[in-house]
Amino acid sequence: MTTATPSPEQMLQILADGGEHLRESLLAQLERMAREGGSALLASLREALVKVLSADSHHRVDDEEHSGSWTRSWQVSALVIVAGDDAAARRLMDLYSDRAQEPNRWIRYWTLATASGRKEHAAWVRARAEAVARDQGEHLMLRCLGWALAAEFDDSSEALAALLWALQGGQTPFPGAPRYACAAGDAATAVVARSGALRALRVVPLAQCFEEVEAIVDTGSFASFTWDALTVLGRFGGTARAAEASHTLARFVVAKRRQREFYDMVGVAVKSIGRLGVAQTDLLIAELESASPGVAVEAARALEVLLTTPQAVDRLLELATLSNERDDKLAAALRCMQRAGVVEHLDSNLRCGQVRREDAARRMLIEMGGSVAVDRAQVRRQDLESRRAVVAEFDVRQRDHVKWIALGDGVATWISVGMWVVVFAIGTVTIMLGVLMGYRQGFETFSAWAMTGTGAVFSLLGKVGFQGRLVEVAGARAAARLAVFNAYQRRLQQVDLVLAQRFIDGIQVTPDELAQLSALISTAQVETQESLLSLMPSEKELDAYQKRKATLEGGR
View 1 (cartoon, rainbow, N blue to C red):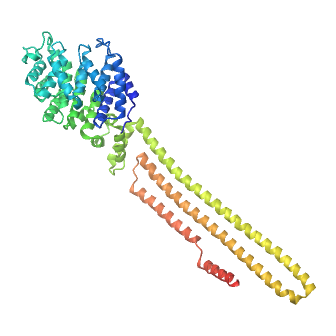
View 2 (cartoon, one colour; view 1 turned 180 degrees about the horizontal axis):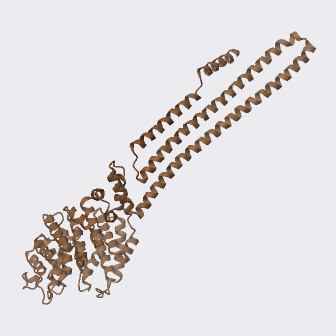
View 3 (cartoon, rainbow, N blue to C red; view 1 turned 135 degrees about the vertical axis):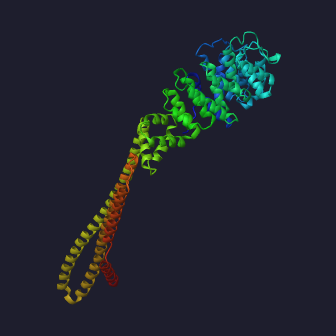
């Protein structure tokens, strides 16, 4: 389902006040837009971010412990994505990655980490990473990121050795080159060093460090760096280590799935399995019934990522056909997937021809409920309204047609009436004049003219009267044919409405019912044909019409 692109003002609002999920989605959307090429929207957002971040760039304080500092971190990350070659944006990137001007280490970290994923900033990242890696006064987390980037860009063995030293806890003498020497006290605890190295590997997953990360996951300590290690393994998708990483994560899930304190980490492991692209279908389906709702949600989303939405729905429907005891869990998993795709695929399974599968699809739709049920009701209502509109259109057309036919019939009738009135009046006057002139001029002289004039007048009016009756009969027959046809259309619509309602309700039409509906349609067709044929003029009527027409033409 396509999401509308927010305006620059809406983007600023999300970066300032939105939740973490909304902010992550926005950054992902900005990255897609930047890959597709520059646009006026990105330019407007860049201008707005430069204005916002420049307003307080001269009075930085160490606000690392304040929740408000995260807003600035997200804003800087967005600026890095849309910066391009803009001089003002590049100046702010320099400012927010320099510890002399930006005291918040997380701001500095995310500025460099976000820039490392942008090709247009490759030269800037290489220079900045080298400076951070050499800075003995910099926080160890950022130095580890600098070492990882140096190992990635320059294939530096010294930087890799320094990173592995931190990944192993940083308790042994520093093995790297003097330029990367770590100041005393930066590795006071193994947790700080290991967490910093794993944080760096989340940005740059180096294959040379895979075994060390895998060992941390297999150990399964209840520590924050285990969380980071699980995330790092999920970054090896599409590499030669993907299958091994997936199996390592699966071992962690199986070992920790019933330990309540590890629920969050199991959820991270399940999410990472989905990102790797290696099939772990049975494991993910088992986690759909996890006691932790968060794990079940991540399992459903990972299953969808691995199989695509239609295949994931099919897999869950197969389970639903075996038993209805897990309907609530399966429906909960479907709710976590793309709703439009899930509903569409379930809808297609309502008429797949397999009774058990159709029943399972209907149960899943019912269990999903909520907006899905509303959607189905809206579909039904729209279908009914559309059919009512068709019926109403036919009714209007029939009324209008019959109205015009009635008007024509009325005109023809009044013509006939008027004609006979005129005939009667002319006949009466003619008789009176004939009698008068017969007395005055003689009957023989007047009779020829009187007979000729009267014959001509009566012939003319007789022709007019015949045509008026012809119009009346033809109009009546046309109205009758239209009424018969509309009745046939209405009967077909009623049959179609029954089928549509069965489909919307998910009720299967049996072969016997289909045969009955076909018989109804056939009966309606036969009755309509007979009614229309009965309205056609008979041969006797046609012969009478031809004779009448010949008589009139001969009288001319």
